[in-house]
Image 1 (cartoon, rainbow, N blue to C red):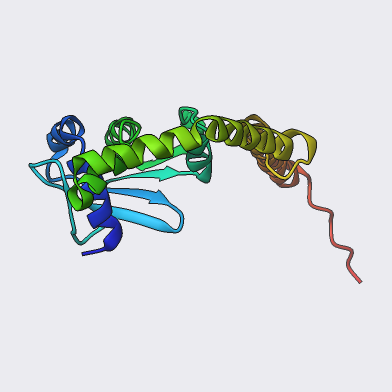
Image 2: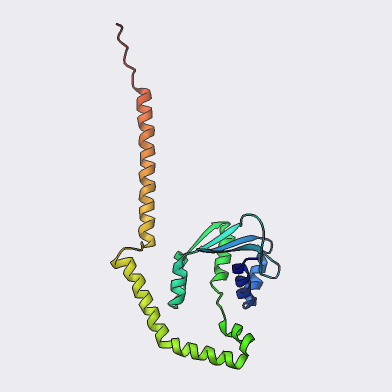
Length: 195
């Protein structure tokens, strides 16, 4: 079994409500992709994923923007998520994914005990409090800079407009080719000169 599948199932194990809702899709093959990691499997009746053969019926592709927004503490927008296959299943899976988060303190408590894990968690949260907020704001500023000031990142709307313009140009070109073909078919053929 893949390590990524084990880690994902561990994360599901921390969220019984999400698992119960995922179990409603038992028997369906799904995949979650955040390059370069892919987690895929068949949904079990317990709400976990089990390894399986065959193509997934639905795939949720997450962009790296999901990670960046999670680090900055912002909720991930739907612009960071794409679906392949069964749209209803994929959107349901994406909604469930948005509610997952890792409870590191819970995992740490299994190793060092509840009291020490809670103290470590509190220490980390207090250490990251102001610094985490500053880091999140710096990350947001950096993303905005890459998108607006130095156009290394394209806005979703700009890409959509470009794709629509290319589609329109392609359609216009095809219509022009058909008109030319009709005109050529209607044009009288010149008489061949006899020599």
